[in-house]
Image (cartoon, rainbow, N blue to C red):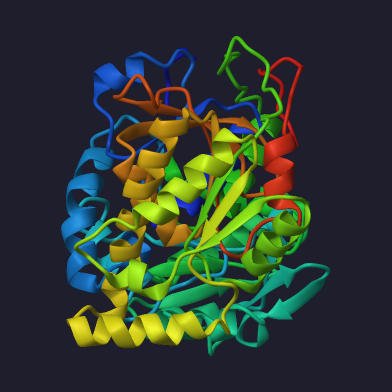
Length: 463
């Protein structure tokens, strides 16, 4: 096996979801670099032992026409790579609708670059993240409780893509005309030969999309084996959460497709004396994380609505406050909202509506503004470690920082690792970034990021 042989390429429909997929691969030892655009061959050659690549996108926050514009050039480049599997990575809570982040639209576009007739596997469950699919119904853990998706405290009330349906086939069926079938939890159980026969029977029925139930590690690995074996034929394109990465790495290791030794950094990861957190998330989990950080001595800066919507001026007073606190050695958390019930959310929407800015455009508007501010603060203080909270926020903030790639340094919380950033600017190259979606991380996540350190061999999977 050649050292540079690629096993998997993925496109993430939001930034934190992309780092989640990277973690699923890197924590198993498979060197993975996440790029902001499809990489050139020359870029790939600079990363010794690379086995997987990702492209971090923002399609989850876009309309179908905007998605098509973003996805076509990426799919065209990924389809040309000598890689067995190309994965369209979606959120493990399946955030999508016919109007925003349509997974059905992504499948439609992909058909023009991958086999038009092949069955597309769909795997959303990810047990390491507390995500499970049973008889097509999807469940997600929040703290210590598992909820059906349409009754999930956050996802049932998501401000852009609320989940009113837990059956993934029904939910996706509103976004596509593709026939969707299910390989259920019972059909995935048993001897491999028997499961393969059931899988072959499903394929013979010619569905456009085949959803896999996911409950536990053994059946997750079985799904990974079926997807990998089918990818050796026509089904190169796969849709799903980072459960796809967990499934494939489990099978690769069992089938002696081993990682290549590599080292992300020659220096151990050291605890940071201070960090800067910027949050555009309205999740109740992020709210609890902000509250915990403030209780632990972080300095909090709420961004007023007028500063969010004002496109003409930079709120220098806010930036100066952050810079001053950081220079004094304090960690800072700057945030737009405290949970889904924050009155600033409705006020911001009203102001945007009056400005002619749609809800689907607001994420990019806010994210790019936060990115510019974050970059200014980082350059003024020369920060080593930064946290960005919010899936859509992370993508737009990171793009404003002139970063072209990320690589996992260590796990902090499942789905939200600490990463090394590769930037075209010397001042930002090597900065440590932690990016977390609204639903991810323990209450003390921000504190954990500040305290994160690893004195052990960085080739060794952590977490």
